[in-house]
Image (tube, rainbow, N blue to C red; front, side, top):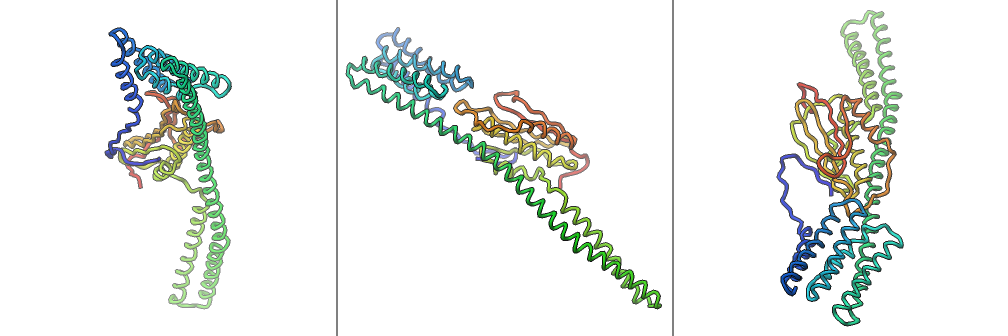
Length: 387
């Protein structure tokens, strides 16, 4: 959900207990396995294997390379199977089941993934059968298969959700462009009406008043008559100039600015936040609009290529310049690319618009972690404050 706020606000402290669910379960399993293991050597071995199982899950979360993640999960499954045979009264089955639910997310769809899941499920069922000595233990294979199938379905659902989110960001950007085009067309229509009716009428009125003034002067009218006529003619000429200025303003494009960023971020169909710091200053003509468009394009790109990642928009004012940073945190390990492609000219267009306003735009991998960073800097006009 998109949020917006001022830098310096104290956010409500929150803690997501779900992040500790997996490690807590693994810790309990390790404790049970070590406690039930016969002899010191077996206890140490069981503890080491459970540590390896947990390490495999951690590596899977930290890597974005599918093959490396699959190997890490395979390590978890192998360690779990080893503990299952080593400590028959333990809980070594849990790492196997967790691995069976995670591994399909790291394998491409197709026959190979089905074969791997089948091998793991059968191996797990045979292990439980050997340990329990009952054919009912073979049903564990069905449980492992069901978990893997459920993970595949969940991954497919997540992929469709991510694609819908990216498309929604594209649609919202297009809808805004359409609304702006419709508003510009309506302003042009009103401007044409004003020009054709009001401006022409005032111009005709001014000419008529000038003719009346000339006739009045020729007839020797007093100043009490010619004076009001002169003032009326002046008002008509001023009305013509004001009408022409209004027509020009209506025909000009309606530009967005820094004040519109909060609405842009809060209306974004994804996780986005806005932080503003420093005292606002005045920008040159078109600079605010250029920054707005750069932020809009950067957020849309993040929705395309880092779907599911949070987006941070930071606006920092200083007496010399305005710096705006748009940062995503990369494609999450549990997500796949949305598949929605852009035109390929977005960054170039952004940079050109910002440079035309006297600023500078840089885009590239974030230097302090995964993700992409777009940074815009534009000069602040000295001695002026934002209106």
